[in-house]
Image (tube, rainbow, N blue to C red; front, side):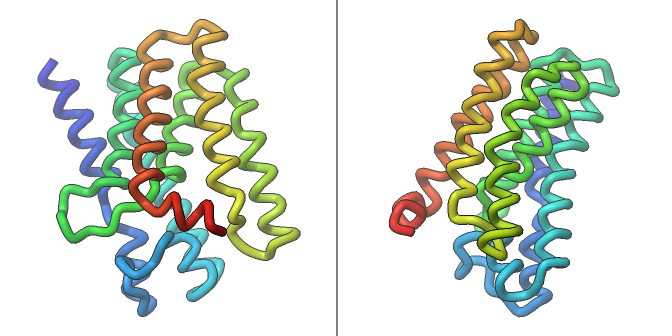
Length: 197
């Protein structure tokens, strides 16, 4: 039990590593003044730094899940390592740190869970965000304002499909918890501004 707690706590701390914040500051941005660091990096710094920040945040969701799976932990612990990493990105332990909305880290964790548990039908949940990304790249020339809606649909689909295809209850509960914390973060991080756009 202690090993599982330490592993989940470590996943939280790993998820809280402020790579995007450091990258933003190195490029002259003030993270607390930015609504979304990925969008700010894309529009104010360039595509490469924005892509790099997104890639690192994605890896912050992948690595804890792979470590827990590699250590032969229960499906619940494996799933909650991914949830903890996303929570760390959203609510870092350092009071003045800038928390993100957790979609990228949560997405990395979810995709890794799908692959390690061979839950391939859950990949259908990737369709809404992929459509939004394609629109962003080829129509809007940058991060799309529809991305929160695409992400929400995907994160609602994940626990639903997991339950329908009979994945371990720990995985389904972990994905449901991920959905809940993403919604809570969104509600506490500028939902009114998003809806206004």
